[in-house]
Image (tube, rainbow, N blue to C red; front, side, top):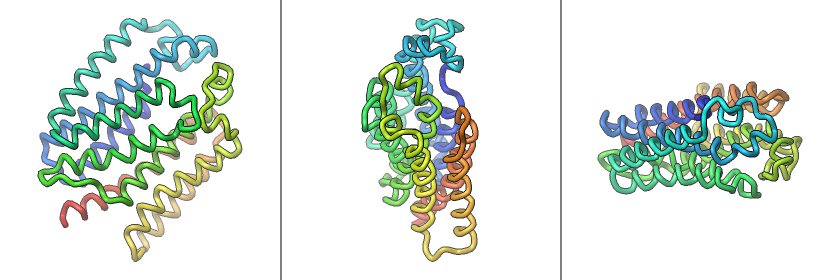
Length: 265
């Protein structure tokens, strides 16, 4: 549970879907999924280690380290193992793909280490999500950066994911001195941004595939409905997270179509 398994699994599945869409050779696809998955483990475990004192102060029941169910030493050892695996898997990608993958992990660690308490708190998410399609395309036999619209759409999805992740914990974070962008803007404005950034991610990806057919218009309508649901969610974020996963699935289809076209070209 200290890995933040829901988001970690979603990002790893997104990477696997992109590998399939880009027709990445099997060995490279396994390396990409291994690198992304181990990076998510490292980011999740390091988050709970770094935040253990704050989590105890705010009685975070969803954090096993803060509850004493697992020791910080055990999580630190697990994080070290994930780091080693990440370096090995990233190296197998070679060259620019490896560096790009390591940059996504570095962005997540930077967020954990302090960026989340600044105005720039969405930046690590935008960078990591925006670079993910290029990790796949740079691992192809003929390496290339992902199309610009693909990068922008993925980055917007990352910003939306950050906002959804932050909203349930606004008060706890303020109380322990971690005022990121959502905390500074307030809940109302942040909820509006959730809907707009998530919808924008699908719009950027779909509008790049002009002229729009019935399928694209249906996708945009579904994405807009899910973005509205995410913005209206008032609970601990489960409804919003489900909406993000739904939009991510839509974006995966659009990202996959874009990468397939680029690979075929």
